Length: 204
Ligand SMILES: O=C(O)CCC(=O)C(=O)O
Ligand SMILES: [Fe+2]
Image (cartoon, rainbow, N blue to C red; front, top):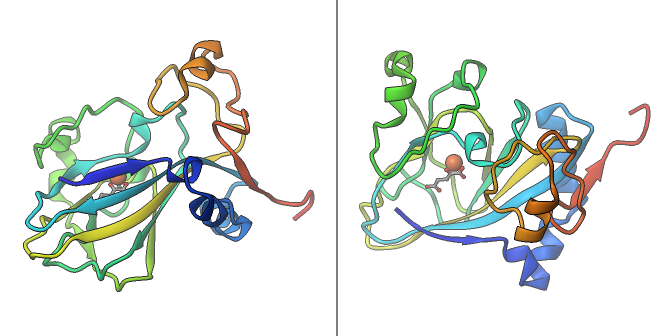
C-alpha cells in the first residue's frame, strides 16, 4: 500500500522541531477537546506510483492506549486527489466504534466483517492540495484510494495521544524497555517515548 517511515522526529532534528511545535499540539488538543497532547508517533506515508488502496481501518485499536479523543494529523505533501489516493472517511463511525482489535490486512473490506452496519454509510473523499491537512479522530473508519498515477502520493502524519491516557497492554511502537516496565492501567507519561508538546494553562 505504501512505504511507512515511523518516528522521524527521533532521527532528524528538523522533523523534531516541526513535530514538537506547540501550535500543532494546541490545534490537536483544541479539536480533540482535551487539555494536553502527547505525540504517539509521526509517520511519513508514501503511496508509490500505481500503489494499492489503503484498506478501511480504525487507528486507535492498533495503539497502546484506548482513548475516544485520540486524533491524527495528515498533511498532504503532494496534491492528494481522487486519482492518486486521497483519504476517504465514513462520517460518524467514531461514535459507534469500540477498541476491539481489527487486525486489518490488505483486504479493503475486512473492517466491515466487524462492523457490517457501516456498509450503509456513504463514504466522503477528502482530496486536498499539497500543504493542506486533514485531521481525524482515532476511531473513525477511513482508508485511501489506490494511486492510479505514475507519481508518488506523499503525506506526513502525526498521531496524538491525549495527556493522561493509560497503557492497555498493546506494544505497538513503545520502546522495548519502556513497554516491559509498564503495567496495564499505568499513565503513559515518559517524555522520551511519548513527548508532551502542549498543555493548556490552568483555567483556560
Ligand atoms: O495515507 C494513507 O493512505 C493512510 C493514512 C492513514 O490511515 C492515517 O493517517 O491514519
Ligand atoms: Fe489510519
